[in-house]
Amino acid sequence: MLTIGAVCEAGKSRLNKTGSWRDYYPEITAKCTGCGICELFCPDSSITIIDKKCIINYDYCKGCGICANECPKTAILMKEERK
Amino acid sequence: MSRTAVMEGSFAVAEAVKACRPEVIAAYPISPQTHIIEELSKYVADNELSSKYVRADSEFSAASIVYGSSGTGARSYTASSSQGLLLMTEVLYAMAGTRLPVVLTGVNRTVSAPITIQPDHQDTMALRDTGVIQIYVENIQEAYATHIQAFKLAEDHDILLPVMVCMDGWILTHTFEPVKIEEQELVDKFLPPFVPKYRLDPKNPLTYGSYGDDEVPEFRYMMHFAMEKAKTKIQLIAEEYKEIFGDYFGGLTEAYKCEDAEIILVAMGSVIGTIKETIDQLRSEGKKVGVLKVRTYRPFPAEEIFEIVKNAKIVAVIDKSISVGQGGQLATDIKAALINKKTPPLVYSCIAGMGGREVNINTVKYIINKSENSLITNQVPDIDYIEIKRQYLE
Image (cartoon, rainbow over all chains, first blue to last red; front, side, top):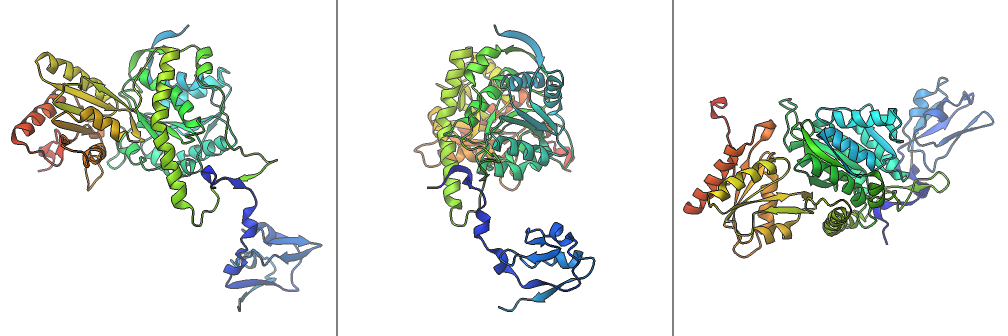
């Protein structure tokens, strides 16, 4: 039974693992200082900085490359996804 | 006690909206809507109205703000005109789709280009398919009453759709008429506070308008079904308004001297007043003419219209707008309402009053005269551009 206005409980987008859409994936190299700029810029909230380390959640990263573009240390490389 | 004051149409609308106690008002000024929102912002500044008033940076923002506030369960209002309404279009679809009962005034003004601030129905006609209920009003008192009724209609749990009260710019917003302003206590009785079906709340987060993979036809069906239900609801609310306040302006339609009429004019908005005046004159000359006011354009009251016009010989429809490449929108809908009926009257489509060109008694008489001629020849032009100035075209 559909609810009017397509109203449903929040957080459903977690079920849709959009990482499968990716053609390129970001790879963090040793140059990373953990500054967190990529975390701020990631449009999919797929980057978290833990203990000055950049952790990417590949379940949701769509491979847009904004993190690599914004990284001041060019510490992120975009590599072709081989499926 | 109610009070009667000679008042500008915009201020009467502002009085009506104030009496409905909206919790959020967001707007961006555009002629001829400006006086409505100016007056409302003044009420808020003077502490006569405890609404959150947001002066938005565009109509898109204004619509988005009331979209959000309505989602939190706040009674919300906005108003616009012309390209301002068009800028709201995307949000209006979202509002209707997520079933949020915002009330807005569509102050009719034509759409650029060429740029002008003169009134016609081109702007609100462009929004007829959004899922927003549209009610066109004839005079200032009706505009007052319809705004109060609009909140009750929009917020009904069987309906839950935005409602747009369409009123001709300048002709209704900037003219003065005696207006009966109702007692606040009675308005409160008629219109209790908004009880939302769902409410955005950080403690109980919800998604509105969530992703629909296969369900889009069903959502559209539900909206259409709510519109169908609104046909009954609009009439019930108009009756209830009459019981409490004593005034009645019709529900979906208003038939004026149509019972035995051979020629029935059909139109919407302020032009109805002029047509009624003409009908009175021609009736005294023994002509069997009448006028049908379409108040509710969406939902479209096809059955009610057929019942009123079925015994007429010809129906002359005045459109103050045009679907370029097709013709008058109201005339098209009237034709659709009659097409599957046995022996329907002829339909004569007249385009008049675009860009604020005056539709006066002589214009109406011309249309009635041409209708009489059509009955003799049994031929109707597909579309007739009334008082088009040929000298501009040569």
